[in-house]
Amino acid sequence: MAEKGALKGLTVLDLSRLLPGPFCSMILADHGARVIAIEDRRYAAEAGINSSVMRNKAHITLNLKSEQGREIFLKMAQTADIVLEGFRPGVTRRLGVDYESVKKVNPKIIYCSISGYGQTGPYQNTAGHDVNYLSVAGVLDVIGPKDGAPSIPGIQIADMAGGGMYGVIGILMALHSRHETGKGQYIDISMTDGALSLMSLVLSLGQLTGGAVKRSDSILSHRYACYNTYETADHRYLSIGAVENRFWKNLCVYFDRPEYIPLQYDDAHREAIIEFFRKKFMEKTLGQWYDAFSDLDICWGPVQTLAEALDDPLFRHREMVVALTGSNGKTNRFLGTPVKMSRTPGAVTTLPPEYGENTISVLKAYGYSDADIERFETQDVI
Image (cartoon, rainbow, N blue to C red):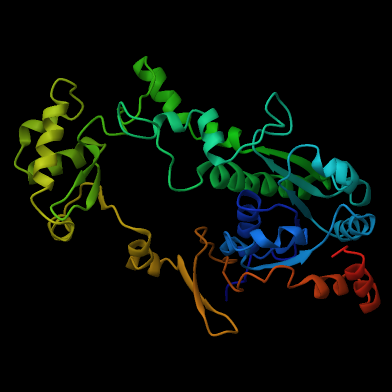
């Protein structure tokens, strides 16, 4: 029988808010870590913007600006494995809950900071959001129509991939290092660094061709018919990703255009070939192309809405759509965990808690009495 959660037994104190840090700790929680999200109750009005990333966690309120709040946090940190924070550089130091402060009470702590531009450098104190990090890293410059303005992607690439995922990677590396050496360490994650790292292929393509990769005009972005998107008769879209010639050959043979096979990356003919496929794909609906391509080995896919993706049998089979029912009888859908492990699989098991829902139970678990908790409430500590 499979054991639940490869990270079972680890405790994470998450001081981050909004998306990057909470997405990071969600992944850890999905795989068994005990995650305690800690926020000041003055942010309660902003709760729920992306509550799905709070699944599998406990949530408490704690005023770190108060001396007692700081003492409570440091007491919790004594037995924690990981601290995660997403403030601007310098904030945790002013609050007295920075890495050096926590390290004094727990030398083995792994402390991960996720920030926009990193803890060092000329932009460290600059405010920003996902679109800004993508802009600075050059990512936004390659997204959008040819000869048009850069387009803001519909998902938060820098926040989630550049920040949250790299945070998980850093934490897992630090855990392995601690296993080998017995020592914790500090992790500095910059979402902008992470976004820039996603440009590795763009950099390679530019060096290979001797010119900068332009929006919707590169080998993997609309320049050629073999890697493109096409509108269908019912005004839907499909994608073609026939990069290798064998897939391109199958597509050309299907459309009875064998003469296009050697011209896959021919710049003199590319516009005429693209126009041919644009007209052909407009002859059938997306559903009809499903039927036509069902047995054709060409690398294609329908451009689905999120609702369609959630109902796709692929994601149902892969358990990427999870339904949980709350005490109020309402059922919510969540995205499953994409890392499939044979012996210690991750899982979505609990609904996101209400803001501060676990404050009392968590404090009691750390040895605080009812009288202590009542005093904390009176003094605005929690």
